[in-house]
Length: 71
Image (cartoon, rainbow, N blue to C red; front, side, top):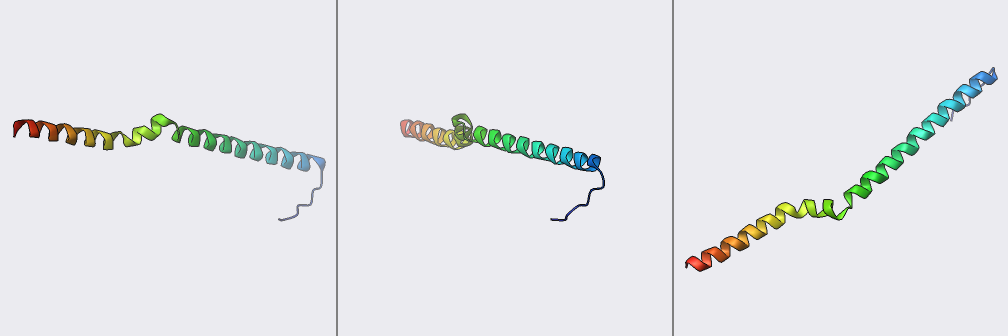
């Protein structure tokens, strides 16, 4: 880490404000990442990814049953 030499309290205050804002931004990023992760694990979202697979299985099952009736 580079050591900064300050010549006034205003410079120190300025850097402290900048660091505080940077920390707040990073905290908000973490909160947003946690919220997005929670959304990904909602049952509806998990099942939503399986919907096309379930639809294909259901369609093939119904088609198979229909073909058996016509034979």
